[in-house]
Length: 145
Length: 212
Image (tube, rainbow over all chains, first blue to last red; front, side, top):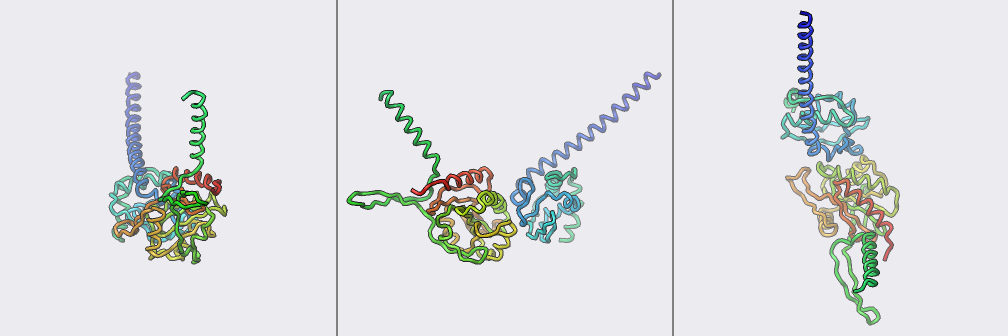
């Protein structure tokens, strides 16, 4: 009887562990997918201006290394990528006033990949940002535009 | 041919090859000019050189070819509102600037192709934000024709207006290396880091070159 109990207990533990493990790896896989895609898109759309190390360019183009700034404005990045930026912003204590061009043809999933890449590179570490996050964050700026 | 001849001949060939690689090639068109000196016929090669020009720089001062005389310099074409290749070009040019900063024998000339928008004030703002002081790196503005002709005919860089291009202009990202006599000595893709490293090495070589 007690042997059976132990066996059952072990089975439950194993089951729970494997469920957690597979979920985790599913999440990891999803993150990896977004991140890899994001890097490709970054090289194509962003790297010319923001640099391969996110270093920006002098006081002309802001860097992407201000982790506090990116943390604070994470929900706005999607809108900036899609619709461009015309307001000035204070990054690393430098005021940047140049306009950033819009990318109106990028689908939500690509924007999500870009945000995942940017907010997890250059010293940032904010985890997965998926297509649903992008859709939610893009709603208010569609209305305001 | 016997062995005694082969060894010195191959040594000579090897040495002459080696010597060649120390010197940068002279690019562009050339023509042979024959003249008579003391009754003998001498043929000289005339190489293409940058003709005289007159532009206004970021400090609203007139800059001509005389300001580049007896200096080696790197020339490129850009515009301040350029959203495509210019930022990466000038990120790379900054490396050249930092390496040769305050070297009186070295200059940089960035010609704007946006003759409408890029006034000296705009160029000054751009230079300052890039972190450039003084006039070792000149940001030059001229009329459409003077800049476009110089680019295509003399620096061999394609530039043009194109309403469909991002920013309204298309241009190539070449960095052109010019020697103290105004001859073209190298062309490097300013958007590629390895090419820009090669440019900086070639500039060292060119600075060591003595006038023939």
